[in-house]
Image (cartoon, rainbow, N blue to C red):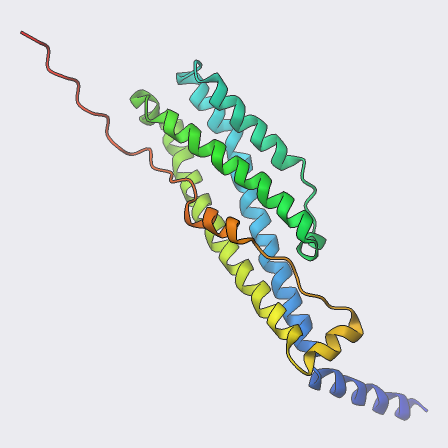
Length: 206
């Protein structure tokens, strides 16, 4: 009896492997890993914002509206419940994207304000935040592109014959991906460049 069960398991494993079941598992795990990296990098950006706001406030308290917009945008990001199942829910993923896009827009406006304060751009703490924020924006772009590729590979796989039959049997469906509008946001992510030298003061009139 034990030998029959063993043979049965071997046959079942062979059938599952041949019909793409194992490939689906690998692709599914690839999407989950890519999504986790996206979330990690966005969280890294969110963690930098309180210090960024406080540093700018120390030099530009009069820019209250812009600082408030950044703080509120970060708060909205924090209100979005993030979990691995989000990649299977287009509406939930869109909510996440919209919140992150709102924060990107608020950061862009803040960076425009920074250009008015040369003394802020030379502050040591601000320069350190600059380096961290710039690196994080780059990592976000890379993580998102990897997620997009992982989802594309997975979605194509479970639509191919005969893997699509296996996907239907086990309930695997296509996963949500970033929208076209969000793709544009990737290409126009906030440019972090506080290194521009302020213009030289005009010579005094004789």
